[in-house]
Length: 241
Image (cartoon, rainbow, N blue to C red; front, side, top):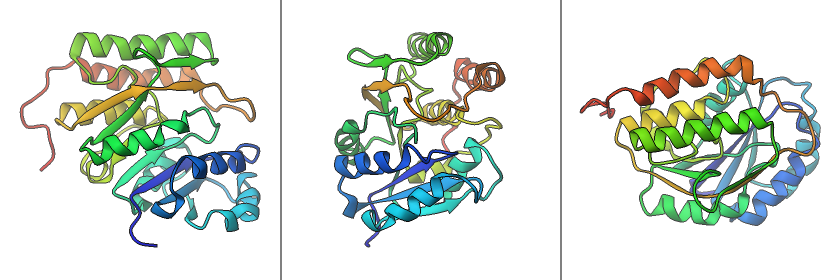
């Protein structure tokens, strides 16, 4: 295929129950001929891989990519970002929690010049259905407080379902040591560097199959690092050249 417009990066860990329905939904929401799908896995015994082998003929732009930087979500995303061939990279969660019906609108905003497109649970019109109460409250508070106190252009910086301009991703250093706090790190760094961030309302659904690896007590300090960075005054020359 010609160079894809978007690369969909899907980090997986034991998502055998979810991956085939997710790929079907993704293909229905986009033009498969214009995009590529990268499924990034940690281990060869992941139960996602046999399912991918069975359905590969239905998704000709599908690529499976082994995590090249060690295990975990952060390293899977780093691997996916480095492997992407599209002008944009869209991270999609394998648990089918994301609002894939938004993808045409997200791609349109990207084509209009957005460097980051953020589906938002916390802006007017957005919703979050299910999920642990404390996690929901902290995520909402973090996003709304940064939006109101510092003018962050999105009220949902912790949402991992985002579309990034690939050139921006490769210009920003990725320092997160945790997992999905990468989304907050990139949002804060892109904003501080002056990139264009836009949001649109989204509905998020908690997973119905499989197990989440998110552990709030373990990952909260890692999110706090990027929250505090957002509170610092912005310098005039933070954008990479």
